[in-house]
Image (cartoon, rainbow, N blue to C red; front, side):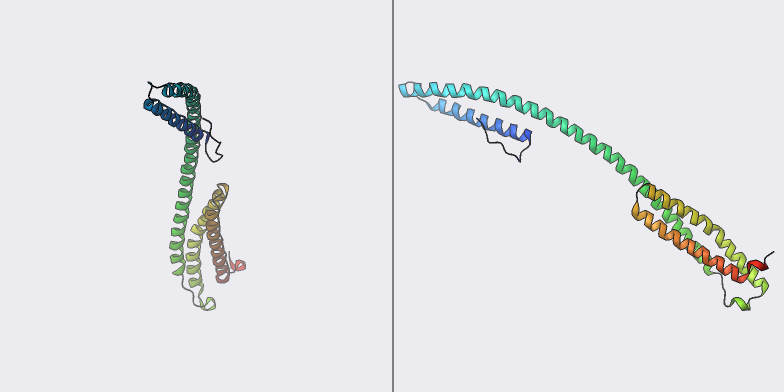
Length: 205
């Protein structure tokens, strides 16, 4: 019993559908055979036709069942390949998430250090540079230098973070880290300018 090929069905679905059709046809023929009056000439004639149809149906059933077995094996193979793909990409996902979490933790740690540094810098009180005594200038410069040392480290750490995020193609994290790096570098430059105002390079020994 041939079925028109449905382009939207998978090979396995087509085989299963064909098998279902042949089984349905076989059941119909068997049921009709059961209802026949074999004591009549008409019944006997119809029975002969039905037996021929049943034999043809058996042949088609055997072929269709073999097709189902073949497509089932192919489906199992596809499923195995799919599972391997999922497992491989799951490992990649876990590894990348681990890298992302590690870099985000670094960025968080740097951010916390920056907040602490901002507090330290905020404690440096300058009203007017021109009115400061030499001792006051030295004290403020010492405070600024104390802040600048960790700032250098933070700039380097953030630059390394930018490069690592870029190498891992984590664009958003790279942009956030680079924005922080630029802010830190700008703060470092401003502090240097302030030190130069307090103690001009030419007056240093």
